[in-house]
Image 1 (cartoon, one colour):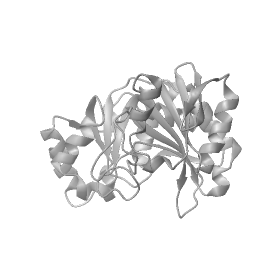
Image 2 (cartoon, rainbow, N blue to C red; image 1 turned 90 degrees about the vertical axis):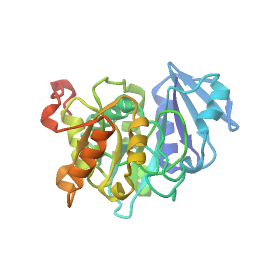
Image 3 (cartoon, rainbow, N blue to C red; image 1 turned 30 degrees about the vertical axis):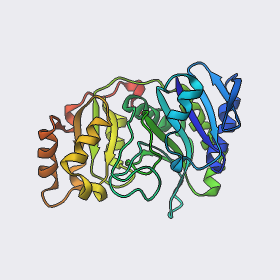
Image 4 (tube, rainbow, N blue to C red; image 1 turned 45 degrees about the horizontal axis):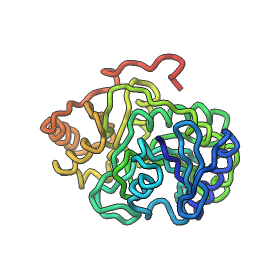
Amino acid sequence: MKAIIIAKPDIASCNIFEHLIEQKNWREEGKFQDNPLYFHGDFCLATINDEHIFHDNLDLELSQVLEAPPECIIYASRHRSESGKRSLTVHPIGNFGNAEFGGRKRTLVPTFPHMMTEAMRVLRQKAKSLDFTVSFEATHHGPFLQAPTFFIEIGSNEKAWRDKEAALAIAETILEIKPTFYPVGIGIGGGHYAPRITDVALERKISFGHIVPTYALENLTKEMAEQVLSATFGAEKVYFHRKHLKGGQYARFKELFLECGIQAVKSADLEVLDADKNH
């Protein structure tokens, strides 16, 4: 079962919740944190009373209620940035360095590459007519979980968080995504919004898991590289945003991942997405 998580203190999360509830005939059954628990098909919709990023081990709490670990956890959330850029983003979670915004220091959370990457593709299609950019974000922030997890967010200020069309696009995306089982890869390099890795995911047959931005490469030791791979189940490729790497970084990290048994690929090495999926 896939669990969708809503946080009461999060304006965007509550906005998305309203549209999720409107989209399907949910069955209310039981409670979680004294909030109603809803079910539809293989989805469970749960609300927590605190901030997403600081609520560790939610998967274990849900397992006790659902009597089985969730297959995947999807956090519907806000994204905040000083630029106020209107954005819809999808990203894996964890910390390459210190845990300033939840989770654990130098610890990554498992991903669900096939579903997370398809969520970004579907969201791009849903938001075509909206004044929002759609992209991945690099791996960042908490909480700490052991279940495959990703965030899907509205950014980046209160006006955007309250936008009904943006919330509807995310609600529809969550309920419609189906995993596409393309080769699994990790992304290395680029800025926080992973522009080149986003483009490759929209154009080629690949399912991205963890994304390591250039600013986090100082933390990418062999131990961390092995964790990137173990938290991206099935990883068999590594894609580098080479133009965003400096001073021999490409050669160094290419060799590092080769030592871990993963070869670097270029976009031309990957199959082109079918026309109906090329968003």
